[in-house]
Image (cartoon, rainbow, N blue to C red; front, side):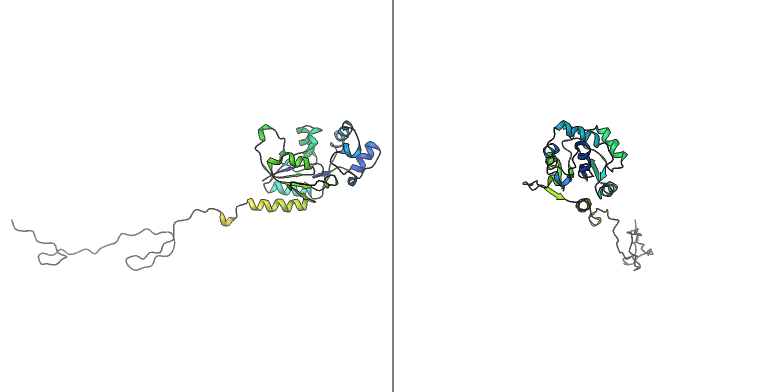
Length: 241
């Protein structure tokens, strides 16, 4: 099983009141961020928002409750977790890997879509951006929209997004799907052993159930050769010459 997973708004949360207070002098709560685009919400130029994220994305993450344990459990159970994030607008792939490892975020790899991996299919995509979820529509079986104030007005008119509110809920959904993909022991193919056959030998002794026994050749009592007579068991005398 393979999972695509976003970072910000899913694995880690920005402290927007503190960040906006630091950079712009105004504390803006998460609930006040009603759209995914900070430029639209705050009325700021794109370059200013880009500069802000260049700095804050390098800081220690504020992990979402349950994210670390869930990701670690997924990987320990053979589920591959690939990070798919807009952070690559602010850091290189190697820089992202270093940041994830530095702060002990469990992951299996980094997902970058291009012509070489267009045929890759993922079982789940977990993101707080409806647009990102729909952009990889043909590559993902189930799309989980992590609930945040900035995506609550999404109408989901195609009905393809499943809203989730916690990592506990995500764990349950993934676990149920993972169990469906595991072949039950009762359905595993087992090659049969040699059949157990019960035989009775000539002496009338029973043979215990078990592997098929080697059969002993039947022994016939020797016949006494007799001269003359019509005994069916005797050989005829040779005719005189």
